Image (cartoon, rainbow, N blue to C red; front, top):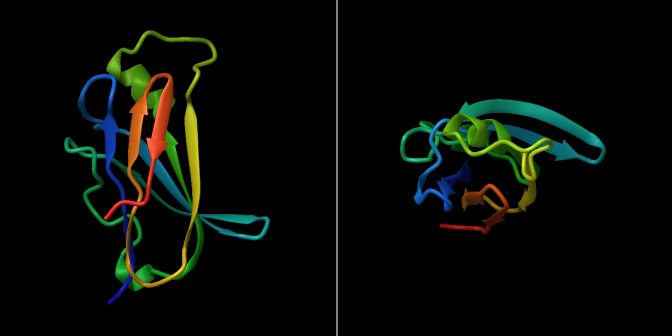
Amino acid sequence: MSGYLTTHVLDTARGCPAAGLRIDLFRVQGAVRTHLKTLETNADGRTDEQILPAEQFASGTYELVFHAGDYLDACGTPPETPRFLDVIPLRFGMSQAMHYHVPLLLSPFGYSTYRGS
């Protein structure tokens, strides 16, 4: 079995998938943070492709950066200066070749994540 990485972003304040949210993927090795790819969520709150497909999978530490502030602005969420949640970095480890699903449940004033399936 090969490993790969996916996500799903849900807007819990509006009760819908978070479409059009930009996500950056980084690999973290010690103090070095290397940008691997930028994706955007589709109408279902998922990316059109695997964030890290099997042919690029390697165990290690990664970071997904969710650009929540831009998404909230685009949705018409009343602005704040500065916004309570703007950029949300999630750093996690992938230790074995399996499906890692890292979803984000988002609202303007809170978020949660977990290792999904």
